[in-house]
Length: 425
Ligand SMILES: Cc1cc2nc3c(=O)[nH]c(=O)nc-3n(C[C@H](O)[C@H](O)[C@H](O)COP(=O)(O)OP(=O)(O)OC[C@H]3O[C@@H](n4cnc5c(N)ncnc54)[C@H](O)[C@@H]3O)c2cc1C
Image (cartoon, rainbow, N blue to C red; front, side, top):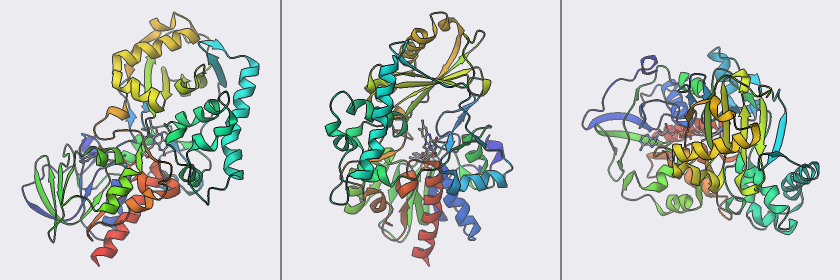
């Protein structure tokens, strides 16, 4: 992949630069493109040996799949529809050709339970329509509180697979603000598309930034192979990385930025993918299997998506955190057991390889995407406020209604580039 980009080698000691963009995910790439179009010369520092960040098409199993972002959400206004067109890359409507099957401990779920689930799922939207959040924010758990102990956990469980977080930790106001619309997929990989958009930029890979000094007239950024002094900096590392302390700020970040960070955290949506060869056990390609016996441990499986020799499981919240912390082998054993219960014991023999992109334990992500804590729905806007006239934080976390998405990160990256230009003007 590296050959496709102007990955122009090492950071020299104490280089001077115009603007440094930290992170080559959707936000960083968009910021760098916007700066270049405005006649600037941004340098992008990326910790990993690849670009795209949490948009990553994993080909390690042979057939590829999107290990992070997969859907171009709210396609009507998502900039990636246009970018894909410009790059001559196809997008398509998602087709759930094979249908949807619900299981409880590996057995098909009873009709009555299915009906109860459907009814419970509708409750979040109903309550968001009727409860006035103008007076005060609350968690989704509180929003659902009087549904009762049988239905509330079921209603909330869908959030584990969409937001990747437990309902008690999600701000209802922030959730209500999220944009919705049609979803598209990129048959050749959303991650690949995002990576393609970095062509021609000055991107330095394997350059984790460990320190940012911003008390002088320039910003001094310490990366693996040296320091760069820049006139401005766009910082697009995930909120989880900012909160981890792995980047040292001198002086420390302003109180307003620290307060914003204290009110936002990372969810933990996680995928686990298997290459499955031979028998398909009578399962139509594109079927979804959902193991839903315990609402707090939902696991969804895309079975042979687009006819590929793949089964992709995903889960969220504390369940995903535990699996990520347990590591690939333990996660594999647990998830294969679930699949064998649903499909039959012979399924184990068909599994040839596993890939576990555990974003929660990934040091350059530390989670799937940002979630506002109840009572902190202003955190995204506060985080986007420029720091010291020369640093702007941008990414999916600062994207308002577009938060949590690649499209939102891209719009936020563009806005950060414009904000920095205004500051520097
Ligand atoms: C499992 C999963 C499923 C998802 N599904 C969807 C979906 O279907 N649709 C959708 O739109 N979104 C989805 N998302 C969310 C989407 O991937 C993100 O919102 C988006 O990619 C974030 O872009 P970003 O530029 O803000 O951050 P990132 O993509 O995380 O980019 C930040 C970059 O900073 C780098 N970095 C980190 N630390 C350092 C450091 N110290 N120094 C230098 N560089 C550093 C990282 O390596 C990374 O490349 C999903 C995410 C996950 C994890």
